[in-house]
Image (cartoon, rainbow, N blue to C red; front, side, top):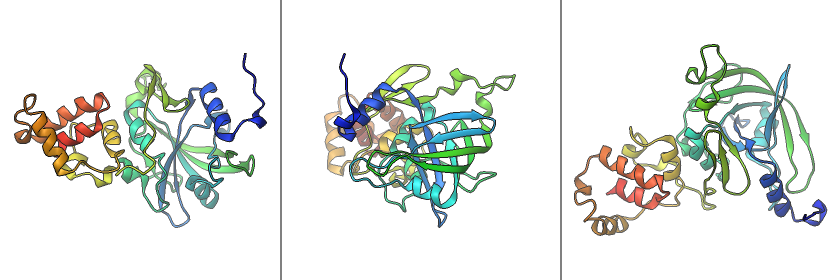
Length: 289
């Protein structure tokens, strides 16, 4: 059996072992506001529930290992002492993943991910309308666990109101776990889906995806593409060029001879098939053809 002294490992190596060994972990999709009222949305997998009376949730925005900087979410909860923790199910996992990218402080991740801001009742940060369960929280305390890169900051939150989508409630008002289909985080690109087991989502590009807010309206407002489809499409650095699209149309002429004349609905349905295989570039070329 391999044995390790944590102090002898680099922070990134230790981080990788911890995330892979202590898994899967639930995801806190944390919505906050900065001191000027600008929204922020980011996921954290150092998260769980720790008390029922009072109802206490704790998540930890850790200091970045590469440069010891701190995250916008931490700055916001320090300034406002409020947060909404939204749970993540499979239907929005790709949109959630997109928001983990290092967008600038003034960027609205709700818009980037194509998610809907829903007004809260008891706190100021917005809820994620697409999330099946949303916890409005007051922050009781922030416990700093260290000053070096990788150190956590425990945000101890008391739930003051929460919301459950009726679709996921049984007749006796218990939660239907199978319908809820929660997603949890493991190490690397690995996630766990409650109903299926492990799957992978590539981490958002370091150069930042274009975001759903950059889509043509006929794609953004699609009646065919799902939230996960939009999240995958949003995680590209740039749209294919007209030349790329023309080459794709020419090369695929034998399979899709009338692709240019196809309706949006037909193109979106075909693009979904490519997305199901992870071929985002081809999906975009079909949508733009």
